[in-house]
Structures are given as C-alpha cells and as structure tokens.
Amino acid sequence: MPGKLYKSRIDIMEQPASKSAKPDQLIADFLKAQTVFTLATCEDDQPHCSTCFYAYSEQYNMIVFKSSEKTEHIRQVLLNNLVGGSVLPDKLQTGKIKGVQFKGKMFEPESQCLSDLKKTYYAKYPFALAMGGEVWVIQLSWIKFTDNTLGFGKKVKWESA
Image 1: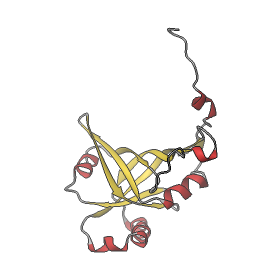
Image 2 (image 1 turned 90 degrees about the vertical axis):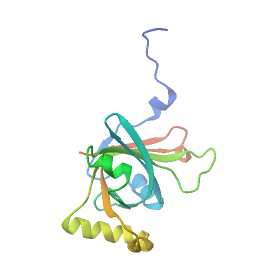
Image 3 (image 1 turned 90 degrees about the horizontal axis):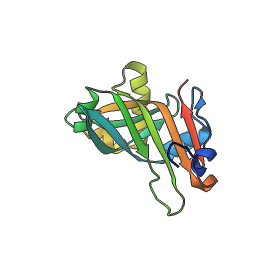
Image 4 (image 1 turned 30 degrees about the horizontal axis):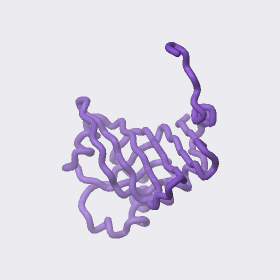
C-alpha cells in the first residue's frame, strides 16, 4: 500500500543504540578477534573503499592501523575525516552471519595516546615495524554488531555518549 510503512522482522528485533562510554563487551571481543577491516572514505562525492590490517584498542575504543599518506584513502581522509567501515570474521561461516558496521572520525594520534596505540598495533603485527607508513586511528562514534549465532536478526548497537 502506498504511503503505509511496515516494520520488518529485523527492525523489530533490533535494540536501541546504547549511549555509553564503551561498547558492549560482545562488540569489543569481536573487534579484538579479527584482523582486517574495510574503510570507506569520500571526497568531492567520490567514494573509495580499502582494506587494511587493524588492531582494536578497547582502552581508547579506537581502530588502529598503518597506512601511507600516498594512498587514496589517506589522501581523502586529510580532506574529510568522517569515515565508515565494516569488519567481517576472518573465517566466514555460511548461515552464521556476524559482523560490525561503524562510523567515526579518523586522525593521526599524538603523544601518550600514540605510544599506547602503537603498542596495541605492533603487539598484533610485529612485522609491521619494518614497513613504511604512519599509524592512524578511527575514533568510533557508532557501531552496529550483527550476530545471527545469538538469534536471527540479533543486532547490538552502540553510540558514543
């Protein structure tokens, strides 16, 4: 029927976003366990996606990764630091959909925060010490975690306070 809105089954099962300092532990555990994320950037209405190895800092609620200013995604971020992205399990299992979608602000960290975040990243990827590039972070502002192993359409949302 035109003009009439229907809620889908998934809409009904979603919980409202929690507005707290830290995401739910289910989200943090998932992000810590994975290794690759997709980063979505945009400049002058031209979107770009890239995949990068990352580490998750539960202490700062940030995605930490290494990249060069010569890349398209960093070039775009220097003009527009609002980003989105997704994380899927390193090993996909058919029928057991699980993953994170996120929004945040990306920047190059400084001072003590930089030292802590480098430790987090290099603890997970010691080989990256020998590679060029700078450490970048995404300060997460919104996360939606889907986990069908907890029930069909189960979503846990988080939003920064």
